[in-house]
Image 1 (cartoon, rainbow, N blue to C red):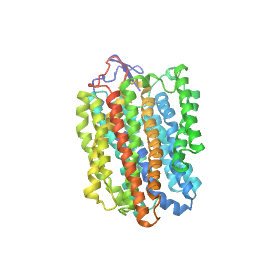
Image 2: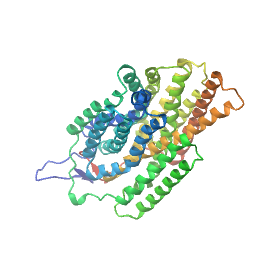
Image 3: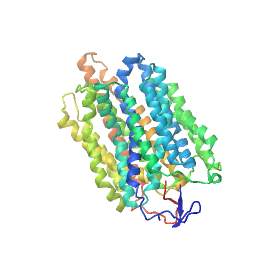
Image 4: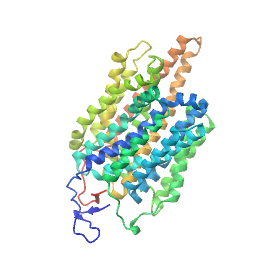
Length: 504
């Protein structure tokens, strides 16, 4: 990889050719965005596409309900805990290399899972998907960070990338429903192989090898890596346990507390070590820190949209898996509209207003969904809320992704991108734990003093969904307040003397 500092090009070898100036857009940049978006889609859709396939896979392989949860948790543990390490490896050894390794490994793990003849093999495959996904996600996002350096194009690129990240879950529901209904649950895993192959070919054609002297490579912070992996595993496991064991369980409290303590130790280590895994300068910018918080909040709130609305559609309205997936298309439509509008606004006024308004719009969409009942219809009562939520999420996702990586040194782009994915994963885990707990409590409270008949059971489930929607609205509203306070107002600025990566 060639770098350019303060407007003068770096040369390699003895040739006289120079790299483009920072003001000259990379002619391959939109193709690179396409490759990065495919990779992001693979990672994001894999969460929901496997959820759709789970009941059929359970019947095929004969594993228990308790084991079924581990197919979700195992992926989340591996993915969430290794993201920071994956991001730093991309900075050290090159985004292209880690990106390609991650894609090939993810495809191989998916093929293993699709061919699994036992629960153990399937669980192993899911864990490996998480490991290689932790290489893909930060490399994909950091590729955009170093490719798009002009403010207006950067805003549009990150808006498109954010739309993929936001709609990937819905795409997974549609694809998972279609594959499960018309082929086999195994194709919900096999489908990653051709997608990854396309992304690998694109990466090899479009991305140049990183050229960096051996002595210039930073060292991997082994102590910090061990501490943060242990901390994130403990935290994600503790939060996941809350769904099944309750918040007062010693397992939930113990692992959550241990995870938070280890993360605090990690921060202390990073402040004192010579070659930190996560340089704290990445977190010190107010807008960047606010963007990380906003992304975590969106991760928590989106859980209610996908999980509880899926439950409602499949149980109360008796939608098939494929119908459930297609039901989320209006939300994707809302996202696409935001992608067309928001980038031009971000280029002029910065991230504060779009992210704040987007959060509040998403909250309004969730409030519309709190009016659902057992007699609601899709067109009149569900679709409007989904469109509004999509408009709001589209304004937040790409804008916050861009602001969270804006202004970082080229050598920190991978780890800064990894923080984005890490906080989104942790936010999703918190959302899973909190919303599952409050919804279950709402159902239990409704049934107190009532006969357990089908009508009351259905209404209890309805109460649980509505409670989750109210909480999600509150979560998004909180995100609006945080964004208004934390994010700076004003168009983004770029330091012409900062190191910029021109080739990849």
